[in-house]
Amino acid sequence: MTSVIASSADQQQQVEKTNLLGLTLPAMEAFFLEIGEKKFRAVQVLKWIHHHGVTDFEQMTNLGKALREKLARRAEIRPPEIVSQHDSNDGTRKWAIRVDGGGLVETVLIPDGNRATLCVSSQVGCSLDCSFCSTGKQGFQRDLSAAEIIGQVWLAIKSYDAFQQSNSRVVTNVVMMGMGEPLLNFDNVVAAMDLMMEDNAYGISKRRVTLSTSGVVPALDALAKVSEASLAVSLHAPNDALRNELVPINRKYPISVLLESCRNYIDAQSDKKRVVTVEYTLIAGVNDQREHALELAELLKDFPCKINLIPFNTFDQSDYQRPSGNAVSRFWQVLVDAGYIVTVRTTRGDDIDAACGQLVGQVVDRTRRAERYRQAADQNNQQATGQS
Ligand code: SAH
Ligand code: SF4
Image 1: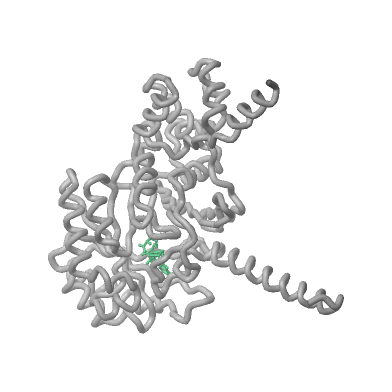
Image 2 (image 1 turned 45 degrees about the vertical axis):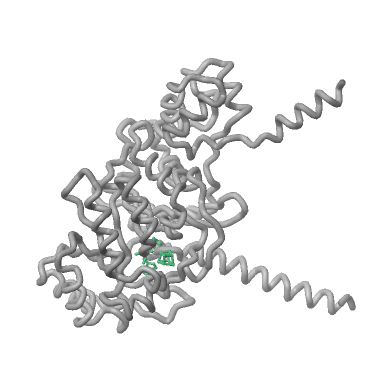
């Protein structure tokens, strides 16, 4: 008898708990129905998690004791783990975050006047291998879950202890511009962005939640049907020959096909005044010349966009150089003269390497280096003790 009871208890223990952190409103409603509870509980729990930052069911005072106990058995609210936090002199804050299975991703918060933009990662590494990107150099490890993506927003607010404040302005904007290609982790990214925009969660306006893609066209076409987030596209070159070198996925989905898909995306939005943000990383001597600017102005002539120039951020494994301030200004001027709205991404958090993929690059590198040292030391020891 005892053993039967013990084994059924063991089985109960082994049932994996659902992490409620990543559930959208419809998914949360489905969860409550599945455990035999009323649908309206979903809104209550969403608010506890995303408005109040609560992870302990015992603190959810508008749920009865029996329900709280049932939730504790069946579910959990588990944010990813912060490995390190760095504050820059200019107010930029950056986290390295460990996700299940040991991978590291990064999140950066960039305050700017009334705004504070959180740069969120979607994958551990990236498979697309753009030639100027340190995330690409790390290869692809795995997709983040919806909980791990929205968990970055949760952790950022938590780190300022700002959940309880009414009208918390810790995160006003989110950009999916950290590690990874968001459209290659479609379902989880869409779910996390839904939570960012959901009033019962973070309630950020759809204009302030931006997905950045290097151009995975079929997924972008699919996104048009399910999301109202703003769109940024990583162009980086005004013609296919150059873009094929910088952004290899261009060989599959060339510029004309990509721009058509972007146009369809904004045409599908209910808000007709929207434009695409065209990102253009300026690399000295590669894509930053006057003729490139002129060609870009011609290419985007009838395309509803604004342009964001990003001076290249250097990193160890790359020979590319950042252009001079003058070169950036010259490029900018050509586009402004052609009538475009052009912003230049100012470098923030320089003292903490707050550029795409770089902190994690260092951590991973250090870990690998440490691993090599350990192996070398082991070999030495083995030789010293006569082992093979
Ligand atoms: N995978 C997505 C989003 C993450 S990258 C994408 O490629 O759009 C976010 C932005 O940072 C992209 O525009 C990317 O091209 C740019 N970027 C990557 N590495 C960079 C570097 N070393 N210097 C400047 N911009 C970089
Ligand atoms: Fe991936 Fe974007 Fe980096 Fe390209 S730029 S390798 S798509 S993260």
